Figure 1 (cartoon, helix red, strand yellow):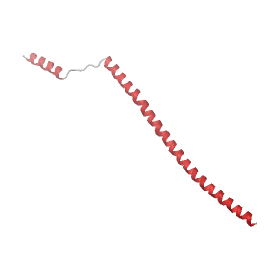
Figure 2: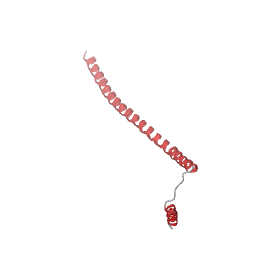
Figure 3: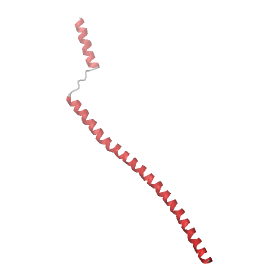
Figure 4: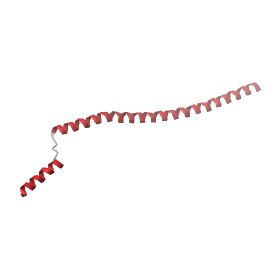
Length: 93
């Protein structure tokens, strides 16, 4: 009687929670899936980082360009003032 109960319990236990045996094919499928996921995600992450760093460089160069344009305007105004001054001084003497 006890053996029958134990046998029934083990059978019920196997039906409710079967033991999963991991074999080499499961491992190969897992590695293949992981490789595919990394193969898809790695280029996206790499490209996103490269775009980010390039955009930072572009922003830095743009701010330097704007600064140089403003300096150029100031220098042109200074040159015009000096030319004007020289023309007035030349006519006076």
